[in-house]
Length: 502
Ligand code: UDX
Ligand code: UDX
Image (cartoon, rainbow, N blue to C red; front, side):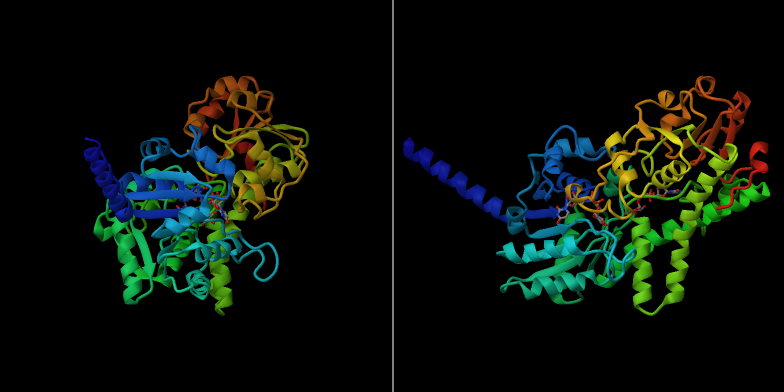
């Protein structure tokens, strides 16, 4: 009997070893907005693959292992709950998981350089480089290394050199697999991507690596949507896609200024323009400006690459997309100040929304930062409400220097002082109480349903609404008594005599 049990246990162990050995292992370095959701979806869709997400940040990994995930993303909780502990693991043991992996995704920060060559434009690849050196250091078997961070074109070449010069005979294949998910809709985008792009070396080993990654995505993405290219095309496509998207917003925002000057309505104009099937209706919403971790950074990268390749005209062309975005944010601040008798000094201004778009708590490069800094420059008092952004985050954002956000949390340079004229509250009614004006900076659905009559009654008069996302019904608000500014819409008579020159 004992013998039978022993044989059975031995067979079970053997079976586990075989299955365990055959199970593909993926490791992702960087448990952020990109790495976390992407790996969670891979784990969900590929139960036969073991996925480990690793990060140097202990609190971030602890949060991924708790009920309070470190990022707010609709649908993410459900996916993580289903796979965590099954074939999805979050860990700070970076080296162990890298060593065991067949495929290593790298999704670490790639901040814009603030000093030295290319300062203000070029990407700082310090984190990437140290990740590559560590991979080379700890590896004992061949690996596919996948670029998931947005990086300048030709980064793969540099990484490849680091890996091969330190390889100790181990073979590395580097692939570029840029991420196209948008925050707020990340899970949907990952479930049903327009395309998955995989770039690799055009060699037999390169093709084999591309094929291996393609098989991962083929678990749920139709084959015709998995595009394969050479390395440089994949890297450049990411920058180009983001530059095109941002360019559409800057184009419509440029039109919004002209609409205000002429009496046209930007919503009507963009609707009419978008009806042309060659143009299409998406990404034509005028706004206070685009934000987010990618658009500005990617365009700055693109500009720098153009300059380095002796293409100043092309660089200048793309630079303009950022200039219009800055112009739009300035224009908004100037509208606020000039409408309110040219001063907001000591006036309470309610800021509704601080995240860079709805359905996320992410504040990276949010236009709210520049708008708030502009108003604070004119000595306003700000009362901020955003359903997903904490006071601590707002304070960090308002006291940090430009570009300092793109580092792991514990390495972000911080000013020791808080911005005193700013308070954060957890309710739009509280934020607007006794305020002189309201700035709507994020298009949260709940702002559309606010009781504006109640808000009006509790505000100083004249009461102003500056809608940076065109979400309120301006006519209804004017009937209540508000003076309303909506981006790119025919101007309120009050604003007509107060031109806002940026
Ligand atoms: C990241 C980069 O920020 C962006 O530049 C790139 O284009 C895509 O990858 P995201 O996931 O949104 O995007 O960033 P973030 O949420 O900041 O996550 C990066 C994570 O990497 C952080 O959790 C950080 O702690 C981690 N990290 C960074 C490491 O684990 N090791 C490092 O050496 C550096
Ligand atoms: C973007 C890209 O869409 C995505 O493919 C890439 O992987 C990362 O960068 P994200 O930054 O998450 O995604 O959000 P996105 O929906 O593109 O919005 C970016 C900014 O543009 C937001 O501030 C948004 O409010 C603004 N925007 C968007 C407009 O002002 N008007 C629009 O019509 C659309």
